[in-house]
Length: 291
Image (cartoon, rainbow, N blue to C red; front, side):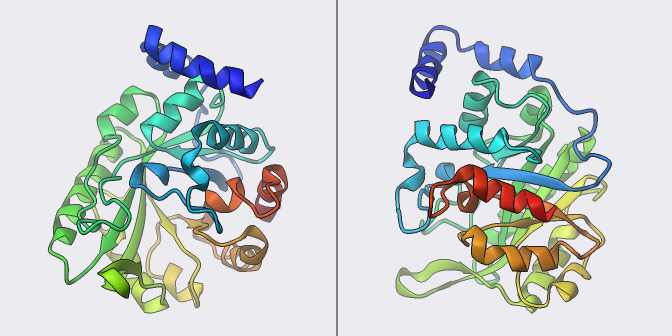
């Protein structure tokens, strides 16, 4: 059944491309993105647009779009899942599949820093911008901010993220900033994120000051040692990212970090969509249980 629905996506794109805008216009939106409990559970699916297709031991796990969409629909249908984070191609597909009614939709904005590229730190805004997020009725935009003191391209990414925070706030949309202190290391000089408390404290402090207001800014942060000190660096609400950790091994650390007052939920992608046993529903339910 899903294979047939997937084939219909391409047919719609060929014969009625305006169907995407129509689906966005009729989507049922929440009155407020965050409910009375103040917690969020977001499924992330913006990895492919940066050329990051691996999950677990499978380097091309996310390369099959039909399978990715089927897993996303399964995750979004589980109780307690609030919404999705994705690039325009993924969000458009989910709109056409009528999978986003009543869900929070966060558009991924800067995907130009392709994984493994020499220009990876120059993370340009090649997907959504604030105007298109507002026009499509999405609830916010997410940006990745990697701070490499040795790479001049960091300044351009900083400036672009600052503009995006300001523009999203002007449209009264959430600005979700994912900051890291990064450097090049190892064979080929690949970009590595520094996951020490000190590095994350610096990254959080810099991200919190972006834009002409922080009223609509949320942080998306990894779980690192001494999270109490990390989260003490800002008053902004934060969501925990999943990264490449398995759900079963990540649960204790997520649970501990979620006890901190500024940590308000999870944004998890590959760990939920591609668990080792391929049971998406069970992986999602285990994460939701923490909230």
